[in-house]
Length: 130
Image (cartoon, rainbow, N blue to C red):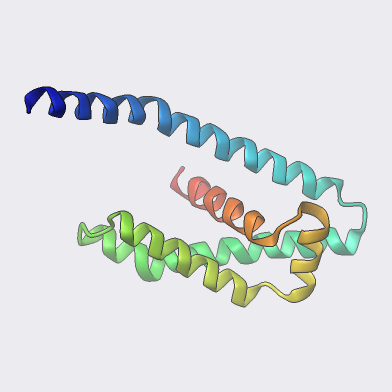
């Protein structure tokens, strides 16, 4: 039994040492990609809509952090399930704030809106932590 526990601990340690920096690197690259794509949008109106949508995502993330995450962190209850709930709440809030015109501009410049939204939320959370 101790051998299995050792292997489990070793595996978790390796994943933490290798996996977390890798995820951070991927998010940073996705962030750089999204910024580059936004600057490539030729249509001024579409670019402004994307920039407004970015602001809406930032507002949604900050709202969820202030109304949900901060209190759970203080209580020591911000576990994995709460993180998924926070992501769902941020997505829901962002969807409520972002107009159809903004969604269309994002989809024409980036592709799938939900993929863009997930990446933008993760980027905003990461930037907020720093």
